[in-house]
Image (cartoon, rainbow, N blue to C red; front, top):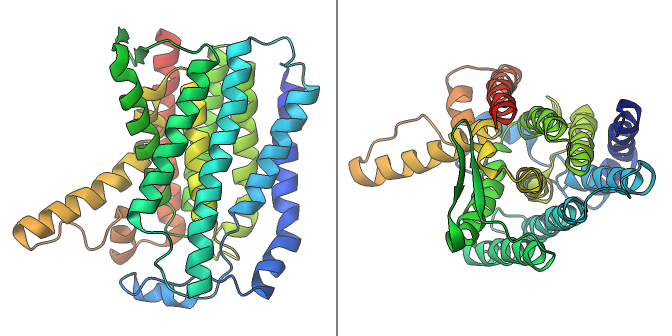
Length: 330
């Protein structure tokens, strides 16, 4: 796959996502699909009350159409069967996660409160999607249980691979969801992560995952036209769960799920900040951070939203460099 072909895919994802905002955002406003701000969130977030949410539909549309364009026209018909399976199954998994997020957002919007699906319903849906994805890969001939451990080599973990994979997918999707808390943060971090995974796909000569990565990057960039501070639309769980599914699709499609430790370093830090905050408060009655996830801690420490986005994106870029280095040495 040549650079021009990838540029076409990335450009299509960017343009479809960016241009769709001209119609999707007014449509969401008309339906009064506005964000309800959490009572325990930063007080200054109250001014964001009513900003249209569920905007993730914009980049879901852009990315899926761009991938279809690439798959149909960019000479992927000669690719390996397993690689094509990873592409198709990965996109379907991401859309399924986005659909679950849409259901959660819709319930929140209709009820005008931040309840949505129950924790058990969300977990059941996420487990079902993850298991279905892995089952499709297995039935399609992807039966390897070998893990590529960055900088160390390969390790066959046998049947433990499948519960491990489910844990990684569910954990990663929820971690991406936690990162969506301030204007432009999740889409910026995911854009950088997608670029990093694009370089890894190039090293692995995996055209299908290369296509998926540039489509994801283009979609995130198109969404940032509307989501960068001050945001005119939020992605909602519709978008963040879809992005989580896409990141997982890329990591597993490259057969390097542990690369998420590097490219997803911010997702991990956000999740750990919540876990540590809960443990500390329940055991000692004290909080480690002013507020979690950690991006709110920096907000309450006086950092602007733009500064947080820039810093977290830079950290992700460093993680991506490590991921690329590990792929080169694999």
